[in-house]
Structures are given as C-alpha cells and as structure tokens.
Amino acid sequence: MALRVLSIGLSLGHDLVVNKHIYDAPALFDFDAIVLDPADLPDFWKEQMVREEGFPVLPYDPVKDTGGVLRSFLAGRTSEMTTFLGRPRLLICVLRRVQGIYTPRNWRDREPPWIDNYSWLPIVAGLEEKSIGYYISSGEGSTVRIVDPANDFMAYFRAFKDQLFHEAYLESDVLEHGNVRGFHTIATDYADHPISFAFHCGKATVVFLPPVSGYYDSEKMAGVLLQCILRAFPEAQRTPPPEWATDYRPLMPGLESLDGEADKLTDEIKRLESELKQVRTNQQALEGHLRLLYEQGKYQLEPAVREAFRLVGFGFDEYGDVDIVLDAPEGRAFVEIEGKDHDAIKVEKHSQLLRYVTEYQQDTGATVKGILVGNAYRFTPPLKRDSWFSEKVEKGAEAQGFCLLTTEELFKVVCALLANPFDALKAQIRSAILNTVGYFKFSG
Image 1 (tube, rainbow, N blue to C red):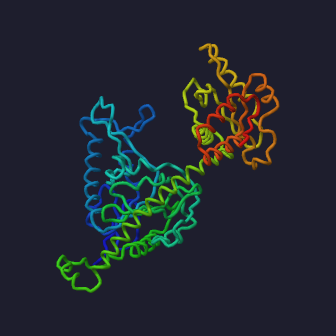
Image 2: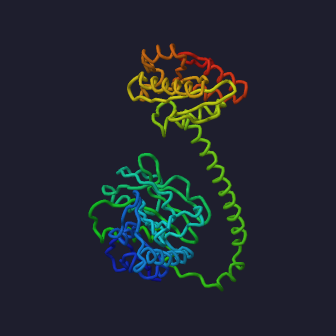
Image 3: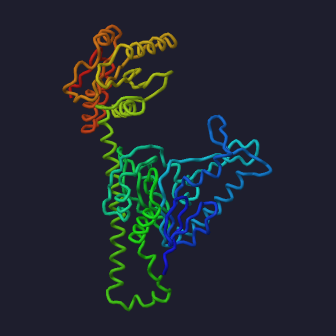
C-alpha cells in the first residue's frame, strides 16, 4: 500500500507528499498521515481583521459574510478531520501560539463565535466544549528538553537540534479527558511545560512538535518526517485485515488467553495511571509550599501565603486593595506580602499596611490586626539570611502593634500542621499570630 501524506502549511520536498494550504487541500480523510502547521490558517483573516476594545474581530458584512464563510469552511474541515481521526491514522502538528478571531453573525452580536488556528481539530467533546487552543499558552524560548528519548520523532529533534524553538506550551494534563487517551510528553521547555507531546484521539495518533526557526531544507525536512512517520506509523504500509480474517482467530492456540491477559493488563495500567496522577497531584500540592521560601509577587508568593493561612484555619474576606484579609474567631487581620531578591523588607510596605489599617478603622470604627509577611533575600538559604525586615519596619511594627511574619516561620507552621492537623493546634497558632507584636516565632 502506498503511503499517502498531506502537508498543510509546511513545505516538504518529496514525491510522496502533497503540499497544500488548508484552503485548497483535498479531503483530509483521503490521507494516511497529515503534517499541519496551524500558522497557515490565520492568513485567511489577517488582512480583514480589526480590533474592537483590544479584541481581534472579523467585521460583519451582510453581503460577503466573511465570518460565515470562515465558520462554514472550518466546519467542513472539522468534519473531514473527524473522519480522519476515526481511522488508524497519524496527525503531526506544529505547536504554534494561539491566534484567533471573533466572527460576529450580525451587527449586534454580543457573543460572536470564536475561531482560532486549532478549531479544525475536533476533540471538543474531550475538552469540555473548548478547542485545544484554550489550553495552549504563549511562551517563547529556545530550550528544548527531551523527556522521552525513545520517541518515534527523535530523528526530528536530532536533525534540527540547532533550529528548534518554542513559541507556546500546553497546560499539563488537560488532555486526559473524553476521547483523548494516552497523553504523554516528548519534550518540555525550561519550566517543564510540554512543548512536544502525543496522544490518541479516536483511532488515530496525534503528535505535536516544536517549530523550526528560519530557513530549512524542504527535502531534508521531508526525509526526516517521512522517516519518523514510517517508524511511528508502520501499519500504513500494511494491508488492512479483511473482516473474514477475524473468523480464523479462534483457531490459533493461545490467542484467546492472550486477549484476556491483555485486557487485564490494560485495566491494571489504567488503574495505576489513575493512582500515579493522584500521587503527582498531591506531590505538586506539597511542593507548592516550598514557594514560601523563594518566591515573590502577587501570582507566586501570595497564593502560597494564602494556602498557608488556609491550613491554619483562617477564613478570607476582601477590603480594598489589601493583599489578604483574614477572618477567624480569634480576630481579623490585614496582610501585606513582600518578597525581595537581595534585600530586607523596607518601610514602604509597612506604610502601605498602616494606611489600610487606618482607613479601615476610620471607616468602620473597628480594630484590625496588621500582619506583614516578608520573604527577604529570597535567593539566599533561609538560615543564612540577614534581618528579614529593616530597622524602620521593626520599630514601626512595635509602635503599631503589627506582626512581622517571615515566610520561614510560616513554612515551619505549614510543616507542623501537615504532620499534626489538629484544630487545637490551629487555634493556638492563629491566636499566637494575632497577638504577636514584632517578629513571630513558631515554638513548634
């Protein structure tokens, strides 16, 4: 059987390959393997796109109805891809950043359909009615770390080693849903985000690869990818078994018992994969507490601090721009958080906390505790750090009755509660924090 390969948006110089754009390609289901670069699709709307309130929009035109044409076109391609994925086939996709556009159906359409360069991949049922593009984040870099050196596409990584880069990555584990099975990572970026991965969808195999930068030899690219395709998809060269061949399976001694054994092992693998996923989830949750010792900022250190206070049994509220508002039977507190690379926590953060506390007392007539959480000298091991708070902050805390809570002490609290999550201990810690003036020290 001759291998039929379609390349969309990627030039492959070989007689076996049909090179087309997504707009003029033949029916997708008429091929054994498809190589597709999603960067090919946005060319359809780039020249007509406008921005409305910062969002990309394809303006509604009742005469041309370009948006309707685009939606109908993609619906047809999606149907073809569904048929393609319903058979033992191979899809190779370059992982590109998401480029999308809203396509209003009329002048007053307030919720126009969203179309992106991944809308052609019909795994919607497995992704909670979202395209795979919803789970792809932009992130450029040149680091490509091979996780699976035995993967069928290793020749691609070797041949273009010096040209590989990434402009996007996949949010981990999002593809373990619905009709998507067997997801595994092939390569990651510097932060361990998947930038090359594979999974099964329907009866087909889908592989995402990082792009090649700059000029590449079309014939070399074709030769490398065809080599990978034949390794990953040897069944393309085989004659499909006719239906009557199944009637002869019972005649082969031992085959039926092997079928049963394979089914049992498959069930066991699924069970172990589920257990491993839960173990990794728990592992990541615990490792997240380590961020207390080295992170900074609203989106890294603050969530770790919030989770620590949750373990202590505090409830949460909001007031203005205060980082965290704590509520507990023992009292109410405003928390401001600061991380410093190579310095102590300065008086500016103390002044900000004092302003919030003063405004609250003026607005409500009630008192509230001030807590300043600091992660000073965050790149230095905690035991080797100098004073975590400046002298002015220390004096201000004493004068205002504020608690100075280092993330090292908060980490000690977390470890103690993970070992002994008793309500009495939590209440004791809450009371100690809310009654401390100056540095809080956890007694253990």
